[in-house]
Image (cartoon, rainbow, N blue to C red; front, side):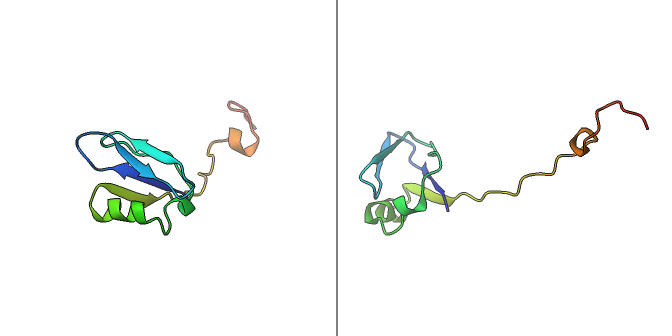
Amino acid sequence: MPVTITNLQSAGPLHVPLASGRTLRLSPGQTSAEIPDVEVDDNDAVERLRNGGLVEVAEVRKSAPAARGGRAARGRKAGDDE
């Protein structure tokens, strides 16, 4: 499941090393785009940042697509009278 990482620091950027070898740079209060959870699972550096209260890692939950309402969504054109 994808995750996001948020920098909880109030001053200065934070560099978060990911499992793939890439580094994520986050400004204070910034939240990353969605990244695969394998980037943070069993990642000691991320765990240290998390335990130190410097970052928050949150799972991204996909909500079910909302049903489209209205007559046009059921195949009728707006304004059609029967």
